[in-house]
Amino acid sequence: MRTELGSWRRAWRRVGKVGKAEVEVEEAEARRRALLERRLYVVVYRLNLAPTIFAARQLVSHKHILVNDKVVNIASYLVSKGDKIYLTESAKNMKLCIETVEKAERMVLVEEEEEEEEEAAGMRSDKI
Image (tube, rainbow, N blue to C red; front, side):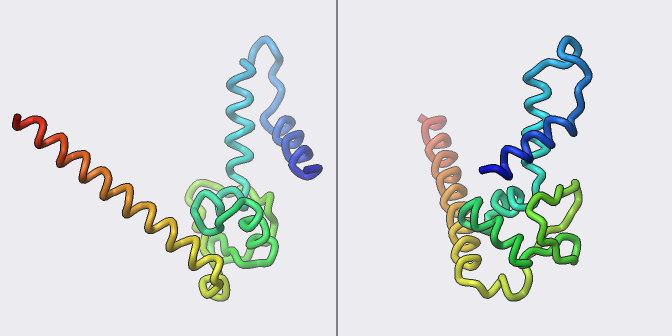
């Protein structure tokens, strides 16, 4: 928990202090959250490459993540727009990663099927 508090403080400083009257608190909070969401382990979790945020952090620290074809093992690494994030070859064969990716693919398929059913139901009600 100590590291998370420290990263919040760093994000607070990094966003900048223009002045309490000039910058709205909500806007500053949104910028801080956006900065924290750019951390590598959070991006790995959001990409469904790991089942939990803790597993994502461990994948990063154990050098199973490539960013722009380079191994990055720093969980707090800030991902830039356009960075390409991959699993290493050894991580692609890990049961944990395989199951997580398959689960994410199944979720996408279920969502697509539900949307198709809703569209079909909507069409039928239009004809009546």
